[in-house]
Image (cartoon, rainbow, N blue to C red; front, side, top):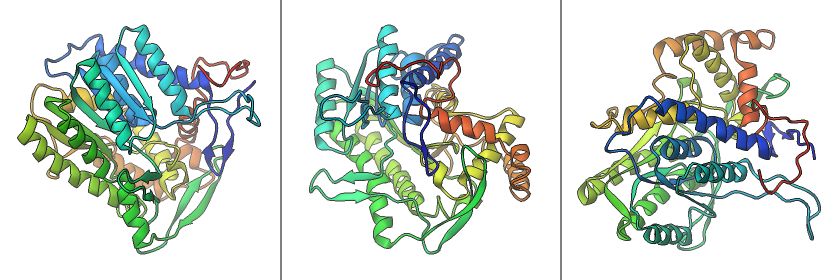
Length: 405
């Protein structure tokens, strides 16, 4: 079977098993090379739990912990496996990218002699929390770093079964902005209707800090958090031009709740375990969802071009390496801003970068997009999240099974 990307409404709906594995391998190689000249500090993590471990920042965090610091890792994510079209199945179907990423991570970690356990299931459930607690007790280990990187559109309340759905919408007014078709490069204008109060509240229930706090408190009660434990969750602020749709919209409201939760958890962990809790504000990237947000694809395309020209462009793995080695584990106090936030978006929001981005955004047209923006780089990252356009992969080769890498 030859697998080509299937694009529907600016979203890629399939994945390439070999491509996903190769992408994971490239990230591992980047970290191993970085750490050849770096000594591991005494406070480096030894047992790391990553919630939302299968893609993006969560996967990159797990790779740094395992292949940089040689930590034992436990990962939790909810992914769909591939199918070769057996009995009762109408056709072959690829798994989600995260399914193959997890498979690749486990394979490469075991080959490197690293301890790894990966759960595929609902991170919002009490059952999953108990599975992780039982596993840690069986391993006779305590978590010294908990990474919370869960991104979901749905959350089932673990106590009463209520289903909450998150939406990415502005609040109070319609937001209209340009977007880019990932493959053709065509610019068009799309609008997002404002959220209802219920939609905004539900988004906080899904993407806010409630579940993160549940995890921290349950693990603490079970006695499986180490003295001095650190926990970090991820957020995005971005430039003013995107605030109406993002920072001041429904997702931004959830992220503000997440950030407030970090301050609560920090106080609790300080008192009980001399521990710490942070939110790291990261850089804008191409994700499966960002491609359909008004203005964001255009902004990211221009941002990438500017940052590559200035020599400070980063992807997920570069940022997580910097977060771990230059913020969380330096042997001294973790640097934060006045709101207790770790800022790894410092390169993106550098005034020189933003001034150049603003200048180009004001002049971008269909004709000059490839010149003022990085359409090729944007397209590559869009495809790479699903295992396509990865160096060293033969995309004309027959893929014999969709159930493994």
